[in-house]
Length: 447
Image (cartoon, rainbow, N blue to C red; front, side, top):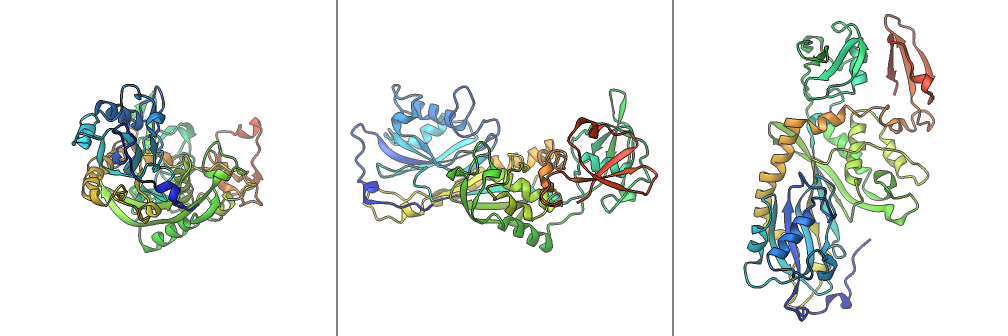
């Protein structure tokens, strides 16, 4: 869906007859503590803060206060709860005189929201309509691609044995759940645990039950082989597809489900608060609610061998309805909005190019101070991604197994009795009786 600028869209700037000017405002914000960008009465949002700042800065009159349609307010991109932005653009008709408009705005905004500047634009300019492309970045901890770190608690239980214990991940605050687990040492299976590096502790108690901690340090490195594989997985999203399985409230037959992804790469690693993050950059014309987080969620699940690569193309099918994982919001931010067609249109002095070029240094400083520091500290202190990784399993997302068993979303389960080597396989049942297993039965999923 390309943007075409016609003669009717480029009328000369006139000022509106009320000393108001049509301008595009370029700003950044750290989304922590806010319920998204879009104005929502009764909720704390970025637009709510900005609208009040516009009023107190004299850009909006008392009569127009709280009525954004009155001054033709539009945003380039909506962001979800907790999502940040470095290059957000909003537009409207504001009183920008006398000089000092930007300083007045920032004086009425919290530090985590900064206005870099504004551009005089044509009377019919709309930051939403005239934006050609939007680039988002998702900072993903490198360890998220290691299938042996922050594993699903059932996989840990199967490795360690059974007894009245709480399974706890050493590297995050995941508490697990009370389970029947007896043995611990000597029950390790597969390559996921090194017996020499396993440190079992029972000095943490809760409600008379001890907590099991497994001190297993990941040695995973985002090398060339993994980089090539991850970029290949992300490349499946590039092109024009039906993304109805990557959002909510939009059906497959809704034209709005059709979106175009221009590029999706993950080539750079940065270190924040002692944690290495992969910089995943996606460029597209527009995105739906939760789309990028769901795209990332499925890509990570595939990298952790929880789903086949073919599931991405399967998810594009109109006749397939599946639930895919959604990555946490903390690592996502809007990097920049582009107005290529608008900027390439030959206009008179009323027109200024809408881009972040003049504010790159300010934007970079803001990003490092507020956005990157928040992402790093959030993972270090709260383990946002680490906790999410524990949920990647067939119990929470049975559709991850879609297509592996003749397009049957019900995974094949292997039931193995402790101390026995014989295995029997049978399809999972949906009735309640199928979940009533004895304490001696350990359930694992065969890919």
